[in-house]
Length: 322
Image 1 (cartoon, helix red, strand yellow):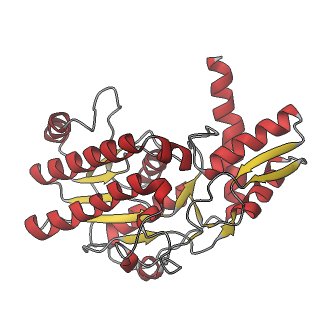
Image 2: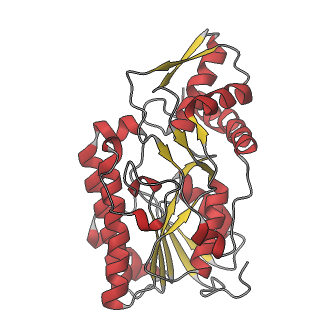
């Protein structure tokens, strides 16, 4: 690990935009170990799609560092059925924050994207240089295009205004605080909720979208937050940085692992009428490892921690609301 940080958080005011989301809440947990003041703004107070509100927020709070974790996110169904929302909302959020950060002289900004920015059939593992070398995966291209625009915004402001704005592309994330909606959530939380419901109801089978052959990489969200903070402190360049584990698993094997973690003994069936998405997606982490960081949490213990949180917090909150 590099001994000297390029950017110190000591005594700084750090705004986590999107602090209630999966990544944002993990970043708030992680930043508590830094000697900094954490700034957050609830959605009811600040609509990130409104440029005047964003500019006023920065003028009043004076953050020196900003992490753009705010985004409209979802799984294949959400992306495919709500393309206008995924494109418009994400474009507005990132453009407003980047422009206001420039206006109010923010020292450092980290924009968080997604590994879905890469072409559907790009060579694997996905190197940062694969960006814009081919067609995107059609089921999430709207979100991907918005995130590519965010990368280019940071590069443009760096080139024209010499802003220290950088971009980090996490792989598929999971963990406490995720969206466990079986239709709108990403694959791990959606499958976890579906298999848990089957276990509780005694259902003999669980339907899984797709063939199960698609290969994916997953990163525990608290590891992701630690990696983001590390990159913020140790990296400053126009090129984005992949954030992942470089380890992959098929959706079929993931579903089986989730069933074991949850204790479900029924049968898993695969609905091939539903899309698989990108056939394979694993990121190259050479640049990340060169910065002296790698993930600490293996997939099974990460899933076990996530399932405990799901049972103890998410389901308890749902029962309290009911």
